[in-house]
Amino acid sequence: MHNIQPNPIIQSLLKAREERWLNKLALAKHGWHVVSLQLNLPGYPKNNETTDLFVKLIDKQFVRFLKANILGKYKEEKKSFIDKAGDCVFYLIPAKGIESQELKELTERFEERHRLGRIIDLDVLDTKGKLISSGKSKKCFICDEPAHFCRKETRHPLEEVRKAMLEAISAYLEKERMQNCIKRFSSWAVKALLYEVTLSPKPGLVCRSSTGAHSDMDFLSFINSISALTPYFQELGWMAVDMQGNDMSQILPLIREVGLKMEEAMFEATEKVNTHKGAIFLMALSMFSAIRVIYKKRKFKAGIFAGTVQQLTKGMIQRELCSVEEGSRMTHGESCFLQFGLKGSGARGEAEQGLPTVMHHAMPFIKEAEISIEAINDKNMFAILAPVLLKIMSVNNDTNVLFRHGEEVLEELKKKSVSALLEMQRGDQMKYNELVEWCNSSKISPGGSADLLSVTLFLNFCQTDKGL
Ligand SMILES: [Zn+2]
Image 1 (spheres, rainbow, N blue to C red):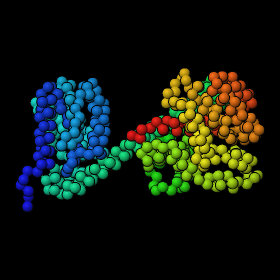
Image 2 (cartoon, helix red, strand yellow):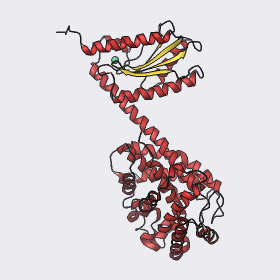
Image 3 (cartoon, rainbow, N blue to C red):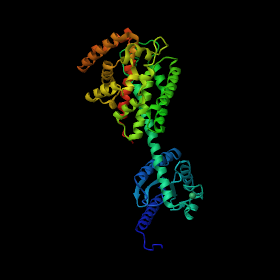
């Protein structure tokens, strides 16, 4: 039996709808076309946290769409509100600028183009209070029949439609969230690499003012290389989102494939000079891990990030370095490990141990010194970043140095870095300048430390993320 008593929910819904309508009419009379944005969500309540976020996002997209299509005729006059009838935004478009029919066509184009356009309802009311119709019918969210037909025939249970719509909205919001995260984090990876090479002067390393200990590369080689690496960070980010399950041990070869593409792009951009091989390895792992943390935990956490790097590279030294036989054709990394053991495990060792130089030295150093990485500008960059580089150099067993110059020179470099840092903290740069001079003239290039500076910077940028 039907309940003939007035349903309070329906009553309040009808009341809200009537108020909306009157509001719209009043606005239209002031010379505006009124476009209203609302959702076609059946059932109650008409809004929740998810729909609020969704309407906010659609609102942003629609404003951008209006600006792009009727530039100058839309002055961002709008009214947003939530009532019993759900989330709603009114856009006021000066009637002088555009015909109501043209506006209707635009709103339909927006709906048609949008992945969830079937949930979005954009109505146009002209200045006479007339609802503009194009005669077209929206398709049903579940099947491809006209929506009004399915509604009339109640072809799908209301709860089924509502559930499907809410799920689609959630999935859309999640994808949007990750897309934005991946863009932000990719830009930080690039920014970290750019900051590292920009820091000048540096001991033995390529920088803005000098090629350091190098004669085959300069500042522009690095800019060219970083530009070539840029698109791949997004690829790594999506890999972290699309990864099925939690078994990190299977992922390394996939990351390496992207890493190898990055190396190819680097060599092409630099005419076969190795500017970033070590940085590619560490930054590719870092980008993947950072996005994985954000995807899983919704917020960036440095400890979990380092743990993820560690899981990804678990057993790597044993697998890749311990089995190398003397006399066979070896890479620098393999040969260094064979000669110096764990001390010569380089970037692999750093990764497998969960980035100890970054996590236990560089990051606490930044925290203690209350250095604000976000506030870096051209004037204070040296004062902020040179001590961080020195801190890294003072503890890092840099295989670039170890391999080419041996253990004694590495220890000498670490010692000199300690004293240059101490002096710098007392306000004197003399020992730093001497260190730069010594490295440049002796052709000592602590490239491994430069890579770790990039990772440290990236990690700092990630920590400022609000997890939106
Ligand atoms: Zn249908």
